[in-house]
Length: 258
Image (cartoon, rainbow, N blue to C red; front, top):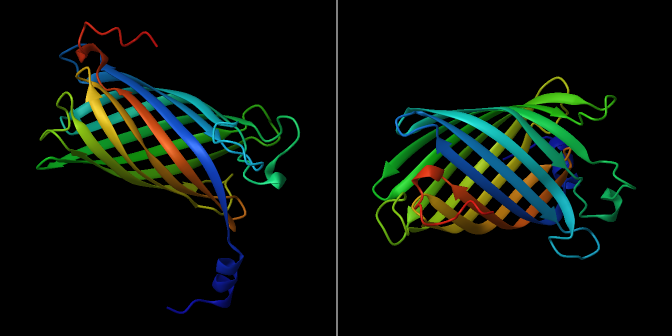
């Protein structure tokens, strides 16, 4: 395939910057009552990163966020969710010495409004999930001079495969999880890296207490910087803790003690 001289120049100038990280996420969800199709949900994200001086992946902060949701089951396999206001505190990525800024310059507080659609499908024991997210992002809200607003669309396809049972939602199920997600951003306050992220994950999970799961896996993520020539390659372990339906867990476990 032929490419223009301009395109070839961009390819030659691209710089892949390795950024070892740890990603963690906890998600708690429950229906308002047994016969309701409405549910509440909260997700908490905690991320750390390795900095340029050769420390561990836990040495520097990267993100802390909390996002409440209200969801509605349109059918047994389709759920629509709305997060009116999520709060995100994000540190700059520091895989190189030149990325480090004095003091807290570069730290951002952000709020997001998010509409999400989850569509499940089954083929024998395989559980597929299509997830679409539409986000409105207000960045750097504490800095009026640099405050911006833009939109982002995210699409993720996920496959979960039970290993020791024939159904993902059975208790004591060991399963494989794999997903791929793309992030596309746009808006009047946004730059040129419209295709901003490509995120890939593979891991293993275990369901216990009926409706609680834990997963541990590996993240491989490309994240394009604002100049579109520098691309962060974020790699490292990712851990999930899910309380799918809190009220359905076995009553003899004090699982909310955390």
